[in-house]
Amino acid sequence: MAVTPSDVVLVRKRLPAEERRALILEVSRGLFAQNGFHATGTIEIAAAAGCSEPIIYKHFASKQALFAAVVEDCALEMRAMLDQTLVDHPDPLDAYAAFARRFVSEPRFIEITRLRTLALSLVHEPEVLQALLRLSEMMRGRWAANLCFISLDRPRIWLKSRSSGSTRLSSRRNAATSWAWRSR
Image (cartoon, rainbow, N blue to C red; front, side, top):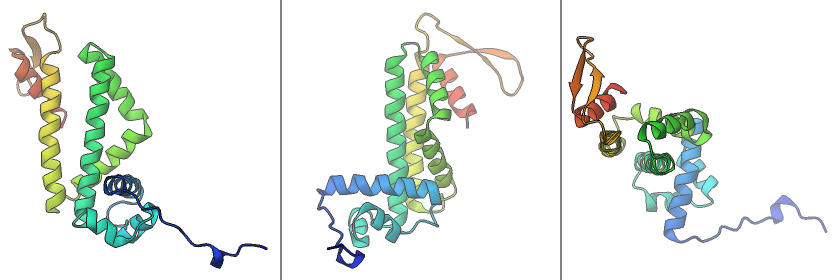
């Protein structure tokens, strides 16, 4: 006896709240990166996550809040990857070079870049703006803290002054902060 499509019943697996939330974030991440914010609907996200639309709203107050959570999740993943790179490469300059090479070649980083770019176009959404501000502070502090300790044997770092084109002597903290801001 053959099974027809009408005989097939989709069974949704009941997941613990944290696992369901993580699944919704993962599915949303891929859909937002592929289709953009406005072209991705919560019905589509729910279907891909194997849940109902109200379940999404049980975990996230709005589609904007869901997107903000996706962006924050991406930033935390990048931070973990940066931390691991710093562990793998004792010299911070080598670590940053390795991180940059990885950033431009891995599909996961490319997806994160798409989502971060998309987030910048949504700064008029309060949830997204607040997420970006929190993440900016976290990442700027992280990069600056790591760059401050580039070399323990060199008490000062030479920098090119952006305005005059001359070279000036700067403290490590100023060097790290200047470098972080110049990359914007």
